[in-house]
Length: 586
Image 1 (spheres, rainbow, N blue to C red):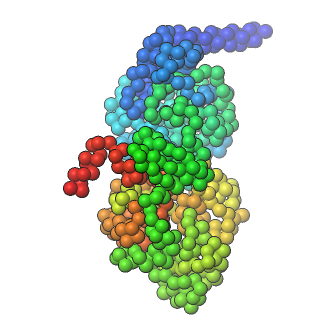
Image 2: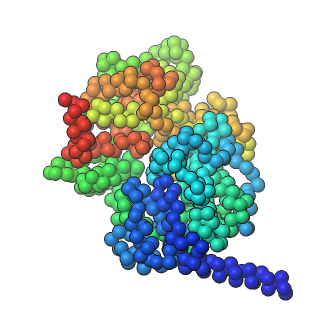
């Protein structure tokens, strides 16, 4: 009886403290913590609504402040209805007194505290890849005192490469806001969308929960957009429950999509959406003509241009037809002095065998096609080549065979005959965990790539995938040992599960020159030029193909969409940028 009475009293005390805290009766009033990308405003510590609104209005440029634990959002927003909005996010809480760690620890990566400038740069890179606000460059250097103790940063590091592949931030509410309940919260969970490692996000959430649990925190809260079904499913699986509390933000360009209503590009793929969003940001009129097909019209100052993703009316039908015919493309760029592979028609079986004898390995591709369909790479036998030719023939009336050159696929995006972005593309790969079959590993990695690219990237379970898995020494039903890392496709195409890694800052000038010469030879204003290179920092390369409709969204944070709109509507560029362009061409 006494034991039950004691428990009841403890529950009443916790409820009393919670009510005090939610109405702002906290030891530290008007609590705010700077997180580098913006500030967390603990609304429950503000006794005065006007003081809270004033603090929200003080948001810095290019920042994203968040007022959390707002008990009466209608009252707060009514103070400044044209400046504030109710964030469409849910708040979830994990009770750390009942949380239990996972029985199995993740493999293939480790989690540690963020340390040093290199880690900070890697974290900002991952934020950029996930379209998140980056931390101010000086933030980690100047952070100190209570702020340093209130914030905790963890990163996930790939065990083999040492690359940072994920990050999470924790806030200790006792140190940040004098929370009498001893709470904490999770922010900025982000995973590199290119990583082949599984379970990085869940591992980071668990690591942070166990960190706060070990320090005696009572709970860990987080905020998640209401339509982020994948994240919500993960949190609920881990034991998070929904709280009936609200978040308020100030209207700014960063969070515009959350308060402007229906987005005309919402139903479009990422390659069209990135251009439409940049056009809208500049005040250019947008008319979506066919959302599934990525077709839209942009209008400004009496000028109107129809586009299908990055293919616009500025690209002539002749240039389009050149890119469409891979054999013709090769001949034209070769005339311009661009290095090309040796090529024969698949119908000439003697020539195919002679090419294999000379080079030891071949590439088969449809003469017409895109997105890597029908492409087979590193074929070492006549039988494999013939099978690949049959598959490609189902997609095109002509099939070509080229000499295989080992190396990385390099995509160079050239707009207006200037390099805008360069990225190495790597084939889809999986990492064994000692439990799952190759087929299951591929399916899981395919789901991750699909989620990371808005449905644009998946790994097909076809004959080419089975062949590549066989070259790695496995069958689809085999269970690879833990840590075994191998490619399941040879072609490094994004649409077949490949990943893309920015190298714009380090690409060799001779590669840039060759790409620009290729676009001038084709006479095309916007193009993705594909090379095979042993190293993007070296001048060696072999031309692969030219893509008349490169996916600009694949190269963020490089300014591909900005360069595209600059080309179509140069008068919408900032005056300083136009002046700089004139100086360069003078």
